[in-house]
Image (cartoon, rainbow over all chains, first blue to last red; front, side, top):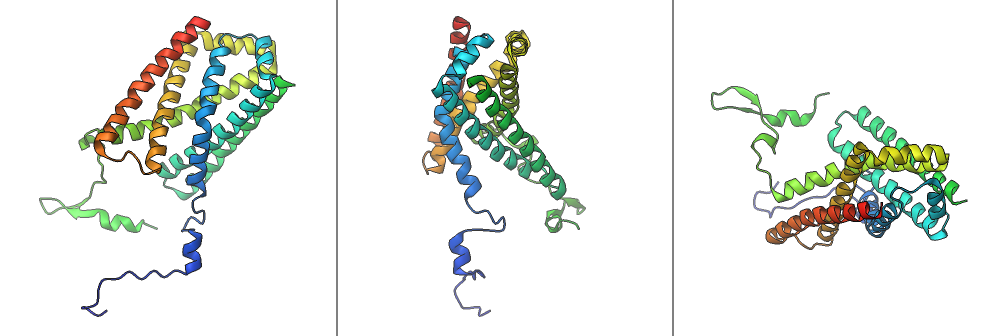
Length: 133
Length: 143
């Protein structure tokens, strides 16, 4: 290289590749953005959840059924479950990626934990629907 | 195959002996700061809330299972051990929510100045304690 030339950086990458913004992970912005979207959604939903828990403190089964069968409670609980478990799966994935170095254990751990999270999400949603109907 | 980075983490100490360089930050010699403490606590409360979500699942599934099962989990949650977990759950939820607002502000490019960052950090701690206390005062009143 010419010693007198100004320092420059050569990016061996097509313009299309740069425009798409997909790096080595082939995933781009999606994970980061989804984590923020669910975080914002959870701000009002967490407040609703806290109020619900206070209203249901020491409730018996009949009170629980009466609460969950109100349409807005059914809908809001389903929204809460969707946002909460999605946010949880994104967060746990980052934690595992940060601390588990072995490739196999990392991938296996993420698959296992996400599987458990999705099963729990479905169990919660079906339970709410069963109480509601 | 050995990680290529390992070659870069080797150096000589003052006696000329080849040693592995320490990775930084080394927690034993790293002074806790508002930034690092609130950051790791955000992750810890996130993981704790993940465990709390299993409890939420158990609560809803038991409710759907019927009267007998639901009264068992309600009694468990009302025991001293259950209350201890629930108090921890609410504290973690409030902390993660308030500190999450801080993270969202940073994502929007606001609040990076150190004095502001310290103020918001203390605000998160204060709000977490206040919200947890208020929640449980109301909780024990309406119980």
